[in-house]
Length: 91
Image 1 (cartoon, rainbow, N blue to C red):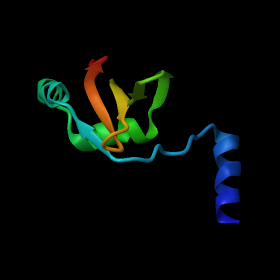
Image 2: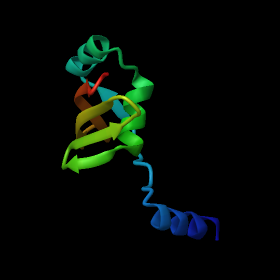
Image 3: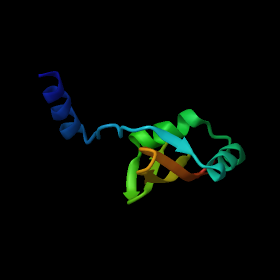
């Protein structure tokens, strides 16, 4: 019953389910995280709750900026690999 109520609220307010799965960061991602001042927690939030703009690309909009990631699924490891990230729209 609880899941049913959550599904109704998601549909009414346009909310989406969080993406599940383990994630790892590529070397390029770690480098870009340092460059843009992003944390692993922020990228995890983008992966879980961001909007999938096109296959393999997710963007999360915040108040004054947005953060985007590219990812792929590694079938051998059973994990998602975030291949790169960016931050844009600072005011």
